[in-house]
Image (cartoon, rainbow, N blue to C red; front, side, top):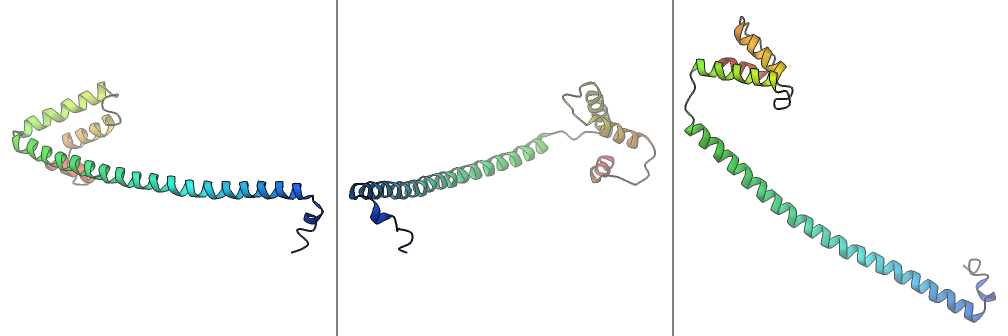
Amino acid sequence: MSFSFHGWNKLSKGTQRAWKVGGGIFAAGIIFKTAYFQFSRGLMVSDMDARHLRATKSLQESRDFGDWAAKDRKERAIPLTTEQRQQLREYLALMAEHNPDVYPNKSESMKRRRRKMEGERSGVFTHPYEQQLVED
């Protein structure tokens, strides 16, 4: 170990004291930064935990309200006749064709569904929701 501090004894007492003070300041800075990092990390983690709990609670309340609203709408809605359902589908297809900004990427799928409903029904469906629409 004497090889690493070989030149230490050649320094004057004032220079040795300056290096000791500089090393002490450096070590104190490292200790302070480490303690500050741990403290601020603890604050951020506890704040994130509290935010997560609030967000989870809010999300659950929103889901519960959405379920209630969907159930309420379904109970209040007057059931459509087959003719009304067909007219509604045609209206939505027409709106999708003329308003692509409002109904993005829906016009082609609506055209396919309309063709499938108007044409012969082969019983082969490419998507599960198409079978559901045909059965409605």
